[in-house]
Length: 400
Image 1 (tube, rainbow, N blue to C red):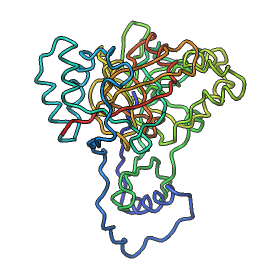
Image 2 (cartoon, rainbow, N blue to C red; image 1 turned 60 degrees about the horizontal axis):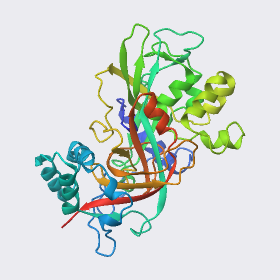
Image 3 (tube, helix red, strand yellow; image 1 turned 180 degrees about the horizontal axis):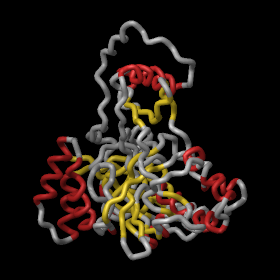
Image 4 (cartoon, one colour; image 1 turned 90 degrees about the vertical axis):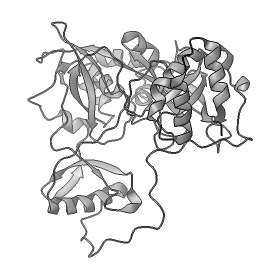
C-alpha cells in the first residue's frame, strides 16, 4: 500500500524556532543557520491551495464518447460499479458526492444497468497535455505475504523496525504561508533540526525491539509495497502496516540493475529483482538495495483477512484501486485506464478498466501516472511485478 502518514514528537519552544529555520532552509539547500527575523513576513493575498484538487467539469471539446474509449464495451461494469460504491464516499467534491449517493442507492445486479449508470452520469475527459490527452505510465503493486521469525538467524537477518521515537514530520505551512502543504522529515540534534538518516545509516544501527525478523530482500519489497502479511512459524499471521518513512525520496533499483548488466532490459520484473537479491544476499545485495535511500517503518495488527487500507482511508478493491499523485488527482475520483505496450516480458498485453483513486505512493508522481492495486499474495505479486505499460488516462467527471 502506498500510504503517506505523519508522525510527531513534542518539541520545546527553542527547538521549534530552530526547526523552522532549519526546515525552511532544507527545502532548497542547506545554508548556514540564520537569525530569526523580528517579525514574520505578512501572508500573501492569495488563498492557500486545497489539499485535494477539485473534480473539474470537462469542456464539450474535451469530452470523449464512451464508445470511443478502447475496451469500454468489454468492461465488467458491474464489478466497476461495486468498486465505485465502496470508494466514492471519500470524495470531497460536491458533484461527485451526489453521484456517489445515487450509486449507493442502486441495487443493480447486472452489467447492463451498471453500464447505463456510468454513461448517464459521467463524461470521460482525457488527462494530460492540457486535457488533450498524453501518454504516461501504469505500474502495479500488491500486498505480499512473507515468512517471518521472532528471533534472528542467518537467513532471517533483517529487523522489521517500528517508527522511531525521535522521527518528526514538520509541516512548514504554519511557519511560512508559501509552503502550505510542504512537509519535511527529520530529528533534533542539540538545537538543530536535521534530515533523518538514509537507508544505509538506519541499517547500520542495531535495534533491540524489532517487530519481527525477515529475509532482507523480502523486507525491502515489503517496504516498497507499504504493507503486507507476516506468517510466523507457529502459523500466526499478523499485518505489517505502514507507519511512516524517513522522508527520503524513493529511488527504483530496476534501472541501475539493468545499467550494471545484472538483469536484461526486458526482465526487470519484481520477481526477477527479488530472485537476484536472494541469490546475492549479503554485502552485494545490500549495496543494490541501499541505492534506494527511502526507508519504511511499520506497526503490526492482527490479520483480519481484509485487503489493506489505502491512504484515502478505505479498503482497496483488487484490480479496481489506483494510487495517484494527490497533488494532481482527488481521492474517490473515477478513471478509465487504457494501458498497453508492456515493457516487461510475460506481462498481460493490455489493462483497460475503470478504477477509483484511493491511494498514493512515494514513486507515484505526475498527472498521467497510476499504480494499480492487484490484491494479496504471490499470484498478485507476480502479476504486479510485470506491469510497466504505456498509459492513456481518462477522468470520469459528473455531468452538470
